Length: 92
Image 1 (cartoon, one colour):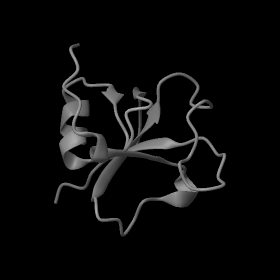
Image 2 (cartoon, helix red, strand yellow):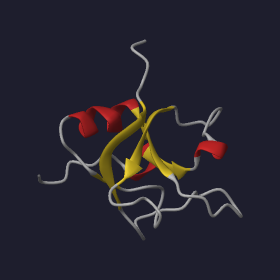
Image 3 (cartoon, one colour):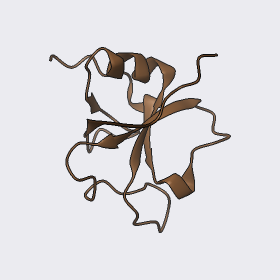
Image 4 (cartoon, helix red, strand yellow):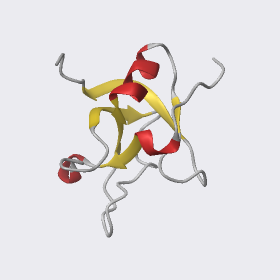
């Protein structure tokens, strides 16, 4: 699929212990990275636990349409999402 990934501030990597609540960007869902997930680490300072890809609702909508490559706050890396959904957005 050709990339239609959202702007870079639409995704964030955090482990379940560092849920991105209360941030300026409303993250609505989380998916595991592709593969075994051990290579993508939480972006919280000092944390080395495996991370989940947290997305805004806009990014989630693209995920549901098949997009799997996302760009967190820096274009130094990109992350490929797997098929395991950890948190789906609420229907609100």
